[in-house]
Amino acid sequence: MGGKCWPGARGERWRMADAVLFEFLHTEMVAELWAPDPDPGSGGKKKSLSVLEGLGFRVGQALGERLPRETLAVREELDALKFLCKDLWAAMFQKHMDGLRTNHQGTYVLQDNSFPLLIPMGSGPQYLEEAPKFLAFTCGLLCGALHTLGFQSLVTASVASLPACKFQVVIQKS
Image (cartoon, rainbow, N blue to C red):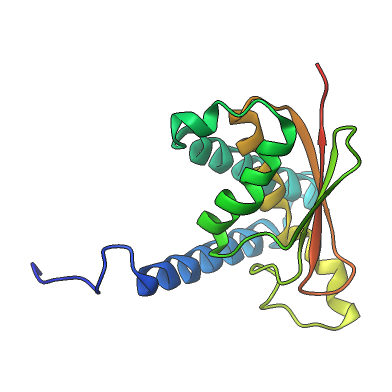
């Protein structure tokens, strides 16, 4: 078909389609990695979290490699985290992070009050224990993007009430 696409090559409908496809892909990755494993000695859930983080890390690196050169010249930790909260988050989730806090000693807390990958989950407390597997990929993504920007980091996530979550980023000093 040689016809026109929707108005604007990357218009609102494309972004919505991209978001839906990414959410579906992410859900399927989680479901596949959490499927019952016939081999009880394979590492189970810990291995699955590690695989998801590794996939996210590589995607974060790839996104970072496609950044404009001036972004790659970021030298300050806080500037790198601001970039993640605004630009990277908008590219991935079509929204900005809701909050960024720091203790000015290399620890940052990124707050998303309505994290898109947690929205499809129920909101009851019984779903809280399921949340970490939906955050592992994103932890890796943040870590990979920071790596490309020249910062070694450790990223963890927590959920107190769905669909809000916090990502704690600790920048490793060399």
